[in-house]
Image 1 (cartoon, rainbow, N blue to C red):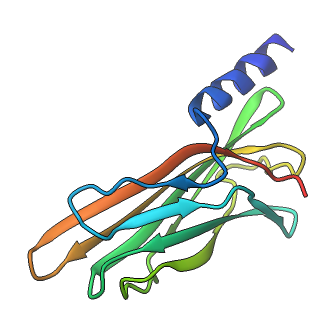
Image 2: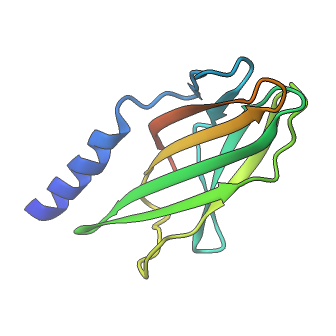
Length: 144
């Protein structure tokens, strides 16, 4: 029990303060942003869908989103990550659902919240500069 509480405490410590919508902060690239929805979706008994809204400047090259997810489960922390590089950069906000599967043999649990960290990056071909911005870590609910 003590180990489980320590594990959960470590995961929640990663979360910081959970906000309903977590805005990103741009680094070296104007117009690049990312936000997470307040609720994750438990799908097909194994996947967790993380809703995000991203914006990248029109004409950006190499746009990508990287998601890291952690969930306390008994005495262990189940984690997963996902990478998406089929993004549309037209200067306007785009909504998508990033699907994350667990990295190990332990499954994610529907009844437990998840700690999520997301990052979006892109490059400006004209100026040869790249930037990234992140949102999180944040605690997202899986409850209906």
